[in-house]
Image (cartoon, rainbow, N blue to C red; front, side):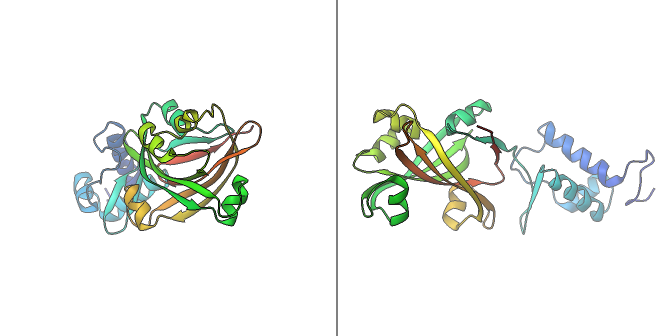
Length: 243
């Protein structure tokens, strides 16, 4: 029997290797975000050559089950969180709907002067005081996104302290009497995580992030807050829902 050809059952060897690894992922032998054995070890286990192993791993990567990190190895890809983009986008609700535990952590808060673009977006004067909140959001203790949010500092006085206590933007707004708000728009782009975001998201340098710039407003259309969120691209899948 050829090591790189077909098996006696007519199934290509690389596919048999891929199926075996997929089953090991499914039954928890290889947990999410853990490194798979090296190519040589896999080849010896399945009695095939490394070319066959590479083809099997490539097939699994195409299906989103594993990812290769240069100089490090091949890792089991964690299932992506389906993240709907809708008029009411709430991180805790979205993550909770998937059976995961949502949590947040304040990274930093500060007061800064509004540049022209943010001031226009929030309906404020250029140079107005903005409350800036940098927060990390997690699902089952796995970092999912780093978000930078700007609000009117005068209206949300001491909002950083409130967020640190409540760990939720929705709860922060409710604390100040805002019971409902809607997503006005979201713009999505792709980028490579910088060193700071990579460390916070527990990503290898060079990994991609999905950048979501958004504006939320009160039901009457009054601008409320604007956010730039950087999502670990390998952990979320944005779902565009028709309104």
